[in-house]
Image (cartoon, rainbow, N blue to C red; front, top):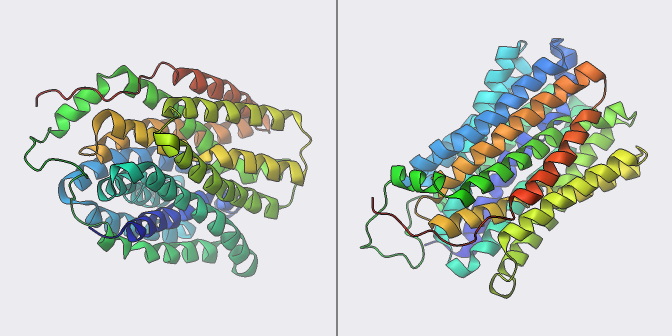
Amino acid sequence: MPPLAWVLIAAAGTFALTMGARQSMGLFLGNLNTSTGLGLASISLAFAFGQLWWGLTQPLAGIVADRVGPGRVIVAGVLLVAIGTALIPLMTSTLGLILAIGVLAAGGAGMAGPSVLMAATTRLVAPERRAFATGIVNAGGSFGQFVFAPIAQGITAVAGWAVALQSLAAMTLLALPAAWVLRGRVPAAGGSATAPRETTRTAVSRAFADPSFRLLSLGFFVCGFHVAFLATHLPGVVASCGLPPEVGAWSLAMIGLFNIVGSLGIGWLMGYQGGRWQMKSLLSLIYALRGVAVLAFVLAPKTTPVMLIFAAVMGLTFLSTVPPTAGLVARFFGPAHMATLFGLVMVSHQVGGFLGAWLGGKAFDLTGNYDWMWYADILLAAAAALVHLPIVERRPQPQAA
C-alpha cells in the first residue's frame, strides 16, 4: 500500500488538473459565441450536456474501477479530457461543441473524477483518516480551479483563447503518473478477505431502497444546479454587470481558492472529536449559507469588491458538499461499492448541473439577465437545507446477495 502522502498527492493532483481545466471553460463562453455565432443558448447546451455526461459516466467508471482498479480508468479519463479540450477551438457547430465539451472532455473528467478518486482514496487509507483524506482530495479540485482560471485568462490575453484551451489540454496530461499510485484493487482497511462480496446489482438495489440515500441524492441535485450555473455563467454575470473580463477570471479563481478552505474545513469538522458533527447537519448548513449568500448578492450593488466577496463566500460552499456526501455513502454501504454508489449520487448532481448550465443560457436569452436563476438558486438552497434533515446516519444492515 503506498504511503498516505503519495495517495493524497496523486488523487488531489488528478482532481486539480481535470477539474481545473473543466471549471475554467466558462471563461471561453463569450469567445465561442463570437467565433461560431451559434448563440448563448446553443453553446450553453453543450456545456449543459457536459454536466450531464460527467455525472452519467461516473457510476459506469465506478463499476469498472470497483472490478479492475482505478488506474486504467484514470488513464483513459485524463487522455479524453486532453483530447476534448484541445478540439474545442476547432468546432463550429453545436454538435461539434457537444462532442468536444460534452462527450470527450466531460466524459474523461467523469472517469478521472470524484467517484473514482474518492473511492480509491477511501480504500487506500485507514478508516480514521478518511474524512481528512476526502477533504484533501476535494481541495485539490478547488486548487486546480484557483490556478487554472487566471492562467487561462493570461494565456488568452497574450496568445488568444484557442491557444489557451490547447494549453489547458496539455497541462491535464500531468495527471497520468497518478494512475500508477492509485492502481489496483486494494481491500478496505479492516475488511475481511474471507467475507462474501455483495454483488453490484444487490448493492445498487439496497441503496435505492434506502430513503436516506434517496434524500442525499435529491440534495446533491441542488448542489449540481448551483455549481454548474456559477461555473458556466459567472463570467457572463460579470459582463452583464459591466465589469471587465479579468473580474470574471478572478471570481472563478476566488471560488477555487476559498473552496480549498471550505473543503479542508469540512473535512476537519467531519473528523472533529470523532465525528461530533453529523454530516447531514453540515450539509444543511452549507446549503443554507448558499441561499443567504445569493440573496445578499441579489440585493447588493454589483461592484468588483462585491463580486469577489460573493465568489469567496460561494467558494466556501462550492464543493464542500462532496466530502460529507461521500462520507455518508461510505457510512451507509462501506467502501466495497463506493465508486459505483457515489457515482450514482453524482448522476443526480449532474442532472441538476445540466439544468443549471442550460437554463442559465436560456434565461439570459429570454430576459437579458440572470435574475430568475438567482431566485431559483435561493429557493433550491432552502429546499436542500431541509431535505437533509430527515437523513438517518446509520449504516444499513447488508442483505444477502
